[in-house]
Amino acid sequence: MTDLNQAPGHDEGENTVWVEQEALIDRIPRGIAMAFLFVLVVGIWDIVTRMGLVSAIILPTPAETLSDIIFVGKNLVSGGYMLNALRTTTLTVLYGFFIAITIGFCLGVLVGETKFGERAVMPYLVAIDSMPKVAFAPLFIAWLGFDISSKVALAAFIATFPIVVATAAGLHAASENERMLFKSIGASRMQTLLRLKLPTGLPYIFTGLKIGSVGVMAGAITGEFLGGGKGFGALIRQSASMLDTPRVFALILYLSILGLLLYFAVVWTQRRFVFWNKSDRPLGAA
Amino acid sequence: MTDPLHLKSGPAASGARPVYKVTRLSKTYVRNNIVALEDVNLSIQTGEFVSVIGSSGCGKSTLLKIMAGLIPPTAGSVVLDGRAVVGPRPDIGMMFQQATLLPWKTTIENIVLPIEIREGRIAAQAARDRATELLKLVGLGDFANAYPGELSGGMAQRASICRMLVCDPSMLLLDEPFSALDELTRDFMNMELQRICMERGATSFLVTHSLAEAVILSDRILVMKARPGQIIEDIKIDLPRPRTLEMINTPHFGEIVSHIRDLLGKEAAE
Image (cartoon, rainbow over all chains, first blue to last red):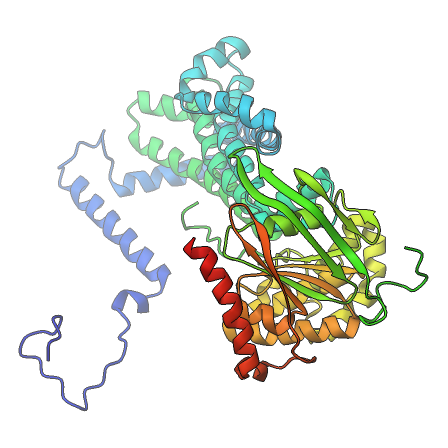
């Protein structure tokens, strides 16, 4: 026996059965594994805060956080001032996303389909994209004021670029053979774009939308941090300035629900429109 | 050129005149100054099956693209059926290395795609019966409404044969159509292709780098050398039709193959 991997002293007889053994983690359902990790983290969090290892201002106990989550939840359900704030932020996000999709898609087609777009427009987009876009927030506030429009602008500004890049990349996704096929059957440029390049690029475009949906949330909240107003971001900042950490945690939780809803709305739309591409997984890499 | 006989249905014997004529064709790629083709002349008779064989990069795909009207030549002319080829034409059917079926369309929708593009959705809808007939011809009758993702590689290429035939082309241009398939499927598909071509009396032009495939399918083989791409020999294959896979093992088949291999080998050694 010259098997290097064989453990010393382990003798393999003729009757040794060699079958694949499923690892323990493969046999545990995903939901249970996730619940286990959740309980573990909350447990440690509870111990750390109860023992006073961390100041309550920095990290509240799970119980305090939970009671604030319930408080904020009640305020939201009963239509209190927090619901108005959530409504403002939701509108900001939706307007921003809509503008980002419209501009991002059009610019993406310009860049992906025309030589002018590729050579003249794309370098500028790359240059702007490499800037820290949040730095433009004071400009938007100066131009558009402290109401919702400056936040919408920042949210749209951040979310546009991934959509442009993804759309342009998607339009190049059709293979050489597929483009030759369309040429050989006499397809016009518009037909090739609409019947071949766009459908082929849809999985790419939706990836861009997923990244954009995350960016639009970040943009809206950043805008509200910096520009005040009546949104959820302003509530978070107020609570933080009053050192009401449990409230901050609770507000962030509801905000992330909004973000998740937006993300899964994109995933759901993709499932409907890109039914032939079964490789996408909502929780996998975007 | 005033023959009243319909070219498409004319059997090989009666239509022994050139349907395709390539004269003094040259192609130089300006971008990198590569001479892909230089002074290529060939003619194909009605009902004939002609193959071009050569090492990769010898310009055979360029030749096919120019003949299909997909790219313009630098010099020379291509004439099909008495009319110069200056762009894609409905009387030319093409097949590519990959099946290139659109995954969001069902098999039958893919097959009528050329009609949808050229004549619109209503005409495409009307052509469904013809497409169903074609699917039966290649043994895919039960897969009309399946999506390409559910088809095997061989089945997908058979569907793309149907797509090529749906406009009833007088000329078939085949760009290494089965090179992505495994060898067993490939042999089977070659026999299918022969059957379909014989049944329809089709005129075909095949680009390949497989010696056995070229010999088993062709009436004539054009051997190409690279840099610049030129046809160095025109070989008549006198094996009787219909050809069978058993012929591959006959001495005569072996002689033809080794002759071509010598030609290509000499060229490669230069």
